[in-house]
Amino acid sequence: MHACSKRFDGGPVENLHYADTLQARADLCRAVIRSAGELVLKGFYGDAERSISMKGPQDFLTETDAASEAHIRSMIEQHFPQDTFFGEEGGGEIGARVWVVDPVDGTANFARGIPHFCISIAYVENGRTEIGAIYSPALDELYFARRGDGATLNGKPILVAGTQRFDAASIEMGWSTRVANETYLGVVKNLLDMGTNVRRAGSGALALAYVADGRSDGYIELHMNSWDCLAGLLLVSEAGGDVCPFFEIGSLRDGGAVLAAAPGVAAGVSKASAIPLAILDAAGERKASSVA
Image (cartoon, rainbow, N blue to C red):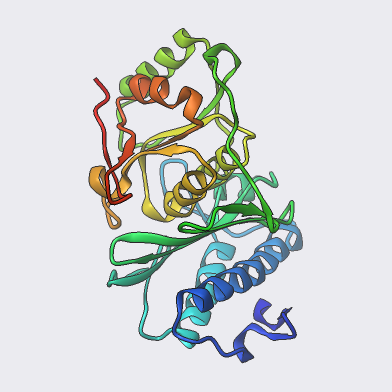
């Protein structure tokens, strides 16, 4: 199965020419995430019995994960061979220009036939996420952001929710085996005591996208990998939300804590989770704030 034969803007992805510019990378990102989505959707609906293995506790792997990552890597290497690539399944190099990719986020849902999963692609240049895309192929919803240009869903601008009250807020929280259950449950208790609704749907990247378009008021994960969160953090920031300073409190290779929220509830969610929010300095760069 080779999904890159799908045509975009008049020609197959592999036959288009992309200049060495940020705009060209944005164009490729949109094209390749949709073609990967076609491949992933065929894998989801195609086989009655999917080939599933386990990488660790509650950490699923399917053949589609590997095929999607190979497709995305191939297209990026073909058009931008000077860029590096860092993916969930195959790892890779981290250079000054790096594409950070989760080929299927929400694999446990995918493996169980639940159509709540996505592909996440971020482009990072000199330590800043410049492009972020999250695509839900089951719903044909493409979230996209470029730094400074706002965030969109299927080409239409999106904004975070205007929620101000915790007893009206809905917060999603991810789970990681790297964090003790007691710590996780403590944060859940803090949120419940504030009156918020707490839920978990099994795809951290989509959870961040849903904060960006106002479907959720916040997302917390006490440890999250960079391929799961970089695109979503850019989306939320560009949609007017508050986010953590990921590159200060975590790292691209090893991951870290993640917080994204609507401004009206962000400070309270930060306090409940002990994850700092980024603040803008005079140069417009986001720096860590205190959660005291």
